Amino acid sequence: MKSIKQAFNPYLPSYEYVPDGEAHVFGDRLYLYGSHDRFNGAGFCLNDYVCWSADVNDLTEWRYEGVIFRKEQDPVNQNIPEDAPELPAIYGIYPEKPEDGNPKGMHAMWAPDTVCGPDGKYYLYYCMDFLPEIRVAVCDTPAGRYEYLGMVCHKDGTPLGQSEDDYIQFDPGVFIDTDGTIYLYSGNSPREDEVDDGRHRSQVMTLEEDMLTLREEPRQLLPALSESKGSGFEGHEFYEASSIRHIGDKYYFVYSSVNSHELCYCISDRPDGGYEFGGTIVDIGDIYLDGRTEAESVNALGNTHGGIECCNGQWYVFYHRQTNRSNFSRQSCAEKIFFDENGRIAQAEVTSCGLNYGALEGEGTYPANICCHLTSAEGAAFSLPYIMQMDYPFLTQDTGDIEPSAERMIYDREEPVQYICNMRDGSTAGYKYFDFKNTSVLCVEIRGNAEGVMQIRNSLSGEVIAEISVACRGNEWEEFSGNAPIPDGIHALYLTYRGTGSLDLRRIRIERLDQAELSQTETDHLEMDPTELSHLDPDPEEFSHLEMDLIDRVAFYERLFDEIRSAGDSHTADFDQKRRMLDEYYSSGQWREDYEADEQGKLPDDIKRGVLSQDALYDFLSETDDLDNDSNNDCNNV
Image (cartoon, rainbow, N blue to C red):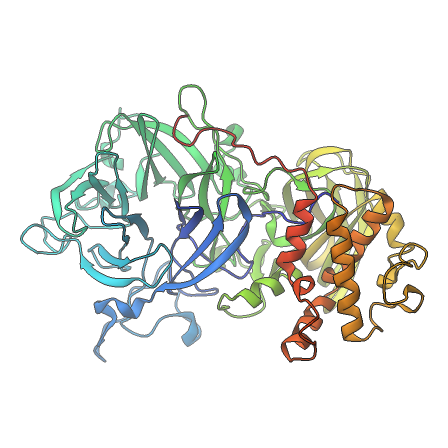
């Protein structure tokens, strides 16, 4: 196997729900700022702001930076009176349990944006759910603990948005041009003409260097639905989610349209006006791509929000998808985007491998939740429980909302929290793309009450390549496998269930011919071939992975780790076998038990602990690969 260090969509852990993602490169790291949904919550963005980051040279490994700003830090959420009114229900959804909502009178923090100010500090701009102002927090570092600074105000000190003459503020986006001018974008527009009150508009304004005071008052930027005739924006008018980038000599303004499920862009020679519609960058249902209509959506629909950013020479669009038959459990995804010679962006298709260096490797175990296509026999629906009911498959988890942590991330890699629920007859889960080579076996891990077959295709309308017989009864996960001679090359993978009842899908495993043969011989139950490893201590003739003493086992794998690392580019059968053994030490979960034992102080200090680190395994595997990290294009000159 070439490498196991890969990036999926969603690229954060399966239990993490960070929508409205704005990605910014500060220094040598890419930082993701966004709202923070609560799994199974009854409203948008119920949790506190968190930040995730990745090295610009390695977008496969994301680091949890922690909570950067808590909603209680905003003065409006302090000293809340006991008679505070209930906040409006969205889509008629009310909390079923106290943890499904925030306390009475507590406002949620919606989509933010961040910029490095002229003083070198970092400024976080945000709005509180149904309140009309823009608020600002500040920090000395990109992902430190932000402190509340104040509201954006008119020159007389009056908060912007509070006057009846002000536009309503919403989804702020902030940008500092090369000449030092600080631009602030904001607003939302009606999706229907009859609800247009004139106060909801796309806006642009400028700020003083204190990052709070208006230098220039807000002006309308893009046409609203009622004003769009003849503008070129027809059918894709501005709705919300302002975001801007300066690329070459052009300004790209990204927004969510009145269709809500797409991110669009427009282009201008200046940052504060003159924008011409460019097109759709991404749609969470692949609508508009190759003429696809909304009725042909490949995923559950709802809003999306994000922006574009360049990292190590490659431009990406960041957006979010819908899960859990809800609009309130949204997850971060990303795709590569490309510019033509005229600076136009081609619509990106949603994939399972957006931040990866290329197609996913055509072998190994993958979580089912990285599907980029999930439909019933009838297609897809708007992501709400009273619309989808139990007629469509959906992504969910058995636990409640999970607080991110480094330990949880490691566990999620081995035992994904999120899975596909409720696959019924005709339901399809699709994955794009895998680099298949000598594929011989496909395994699915399922549970439920179902009996039938899982049909395998490498294109949505293609012929059935193989079928896996499945029959499950109960809540225990079971694995079923079958021969799957998928043609070599980069293809999609579609799994369609045909049968009775319903099943849940947690993982898929792809095996190559040599791997399938090996699994029947020397790697069964993780036992090692003594003729291949006789030079290693302890004596391989007495070696059984699960029977060894803890210290001997860790010492053994430490030696195996060092031997494989020192082998360099060697890819002999001996090398590959040992590499698989070390991989299986991790995939079996035994490494976690050893790590916990080590934490309890059972290992002596002289036993190195690098072998117990998942990151160390990933690092040495990636060192043996020939991955091309050259820049794909220049970030600043398209």
